[in-house]
Image 1 (cartoon, rainbow, N blue to C red):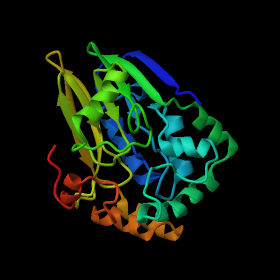
Image 2: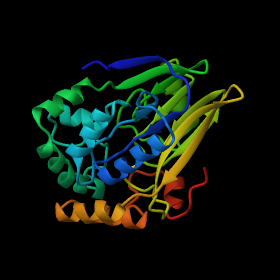
Image 3: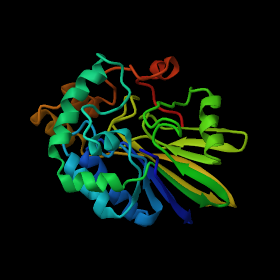
Length: 275
């Protein structure tokens, strides 16, 4: 199936970028309230995918995104669900803890969705493009070449630049990796806003999103974190027999494992993020 791109034309004003809802309804509701407090309209809000994931409210989370009227792309989870695949397509190592846990949360989410929900998932583009203060911007999930590719701060710039060059883009707004970062070189920027459905493995229970703005004719990139009712989100996971380790992560800010992380990010576990 070919990749689908939605072009938004030119966007102006503050933009709110987030991803990785992971079926965490409490975190999503809190973010929507933040957007309203900041007076950021839905047309200036973009989700980088993985609306559905580890937590207990896949259907409710999907419906909020749909009814909110914001822009969103398909993450690997949405692609797998709409194509009736048997796994989440997260690119986890087979037999690893993440892979084992996915065999609980993915079927749970799969069984919650109706045929009309899957039709809506089909409408999600793989990429979003727009212009912002004269720059070409691309919204993607993993990389331009592979939806489930993990890209981190420590990932070589050459890997990031391949996506920027091949997509003819100045700025990439990315998701999937779960840890917020920004990397800028040669006048180009790779910005990952982080995820709102799980903490960033830094020992802090807060979760992350990003704000783009224009100040003195320059684009600014800012990461912001916020608190939400993680206790309720965690309790609902346990009540629905979802992975207890992930439910605990919501309350500790520490991931169960670092399987997907490069060495540099693994060594940062439990340390406050410097953004």
